Image (cartoon, rainbow, N blue to C red; front, side, top):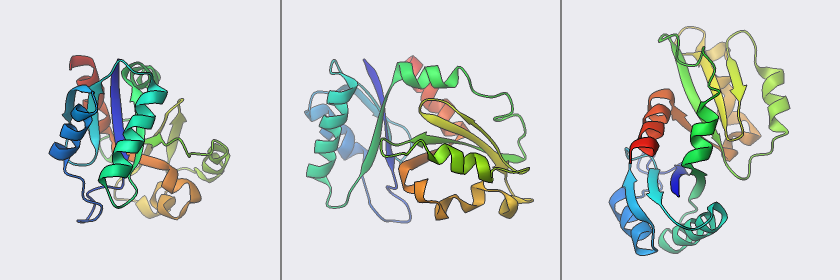
Length: 179
């Protein structure tokens, strides 16, 4: 089965450095095949005959053994990823003047946070939920500070998501199909 691994909070401002080449080699060493990465922000694709639960456990163990800082990961099957993108809203990406992001829900994400998000989303944000992703559109420059998206870092659930911009999210979908 084909899997996508997303890492949270690595290689940001020189902190929590994870070298993708080394991580690809480590994933291959534990038996994953066709391992590839996309950009340096923790997006890896690989194949495994193991279940998603087993893959998740194997990855968590590998990360804990190889890094002195905690590395949070999300493992999604290619099928689950593509299923989430079947229902992507039309507005997500339709206006180039806006910021379009995919907020991937880490295993620790409390789904009760949806109510908090919904209560705070106003005229400046648009959100849509799938099983694993919140599709979010917010102002890019003008009125950005008025959007709820601009305040996400202060929210308790912020540590339970990993964010990819629209271009990266779409590229990952294409890589999952074509690899």
